[in-house]
Image (tube, rainbow, N blue to C red; front, side, top):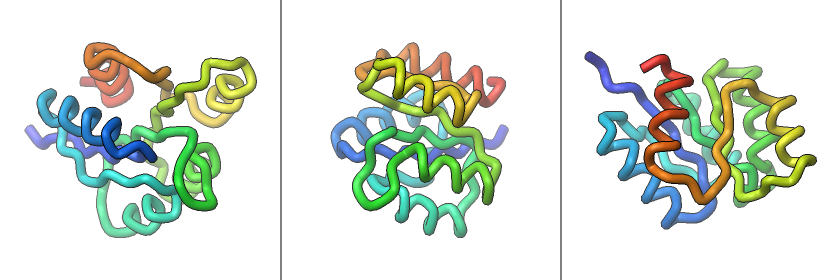
Length: 122
């Protein structure tokens, strides 16, 4: 069985590494860790991914919502949002952008596992 390939887009390095470790321990291949929308879009041109975990707040000029809009148009890759903000406005923006799901930080490894498996059909 081929490992599912996941991109982690998260502006906090420690959080990104924790997510990456968890995904690797679950048998997924993390093919990119990025902290900006611009870097992510550039790298997606040259790699294949089955899923993207996208923080709402990123470094650079594009936030996670703007980056996801471009990803959906160009690549058709499922995106699960990661956010520390539970306010109605943020959650409304996320739900209007993507039906792939979201996780509110901080989240447990089991929540990450269930969400990823739900989207990838594992």
